[in-house]
Image (cartoon, rainbow over all chains, first blue to last red; front, side, top):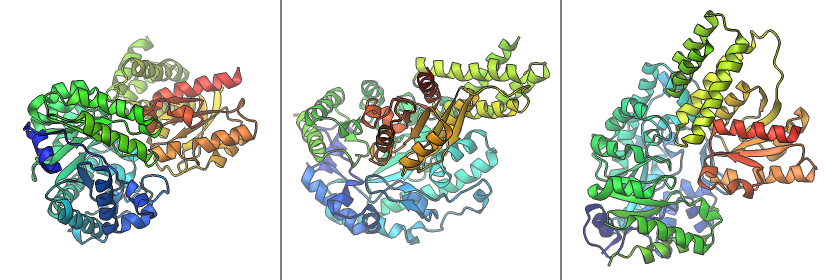
Length: 342
Length: 221
């Protein structure tokens, strides 16, 4: 079976030789090609090449299209990203500097014509041609209720979201929904077949259940309804969300859930059961200092909780650059070893 | 009795309803309670109640922490202008986001809570070099340097807390200035603070205020 078929089997509960194994190596690609991250992310063909090389070396089931936090902000007018030598890029210039800017803020008519889109398209076209029929090609889409954090800073957005004028908040969210639709459609058209729906405001860790149900959920529905959710994974930026899993099933229809390492995985598996895919996620920040044996032991623990009854995937968060490669190898080796189903 | 205001205020904060919380404060003022009463018997106990609540229920949410801090600092600022005499600060903190880190939410929560708890706060902002942290702490006689880092590389990198610790050691300041760290990476690895040279850490902004006050007390002891 191909990795894509193994993933489909896990989602549908069909027989397969093993569980699917995701390894998210977004920032390691620059190191792989011995490039600075700014030059690396500017060239989609380099990102694709690095993803393919790492896929070959580690043997996991997914590759990543070009992504860093702030890429969406660039598509929406951000002029400055802070690229680090040792970590993830970061938005340095906010598109919305004060509430008055919201009225002036405009979503491009066609983001695929934006200069910042070209590298994503280049990357995806190579990945689609090389592994589109066999592997998961992941892309990251930020929910409309979280996008403003990239545009104006998390604290300013939190302030507007919780205490600001509702009409102004909703004006910004409407624009973000417009962008979201364009973005997810463009990613699908370019070849992404697993869409990681990043929605931290859909986690009870960030806001209370009442706010999720009354404010966040309606906007998530607007995000997702036009295109469907078959290829969508619910992800709250590593924040726990067990408390809303039923709500997500009932109201959004999303069946794949990327569970936080801080959450109770056994509880999540019970809640999701055979209705969908439980993704058990290792705490890869701890992998910076773990030994290979500690890494393998944690993989074993996670897989043993999750794989009973099928419908389970093993993965990591966003692998920090400081994690030694031996631990990445240990993680994947252990996931193959303990994730056997036959 | 102020107690009924305390309950209403706490509920408003817990529900992240800023307008309701401010209305409670206005009601208490109209009923003749002093600005000192409002701060010491309403706002500070509410921050402490949120601290206790977080200890019992680690799943309390970020919006509650944010609103606790925002409301507390706003009310405290308003009331301090009306105090008969300015209250004595219990200590001084220099705070900022680590070098390369542009996130300010966590820092803002910590600052809001500290101000309402009568701690002098010198906010250096974001993307702060290690030398700046130490120099400004020395200049201001701060007992604590607090460093927020929301990304793994800014928490663990050589130019962040690790360098601040090295500078404190090099300048013989480790007994006079303590180092507190916080931010998302520390939640995922609770032992991380030791590896980056921190004296203490906190899993959230409200608890951070409590931890920092404890460090101030240790230095002042």
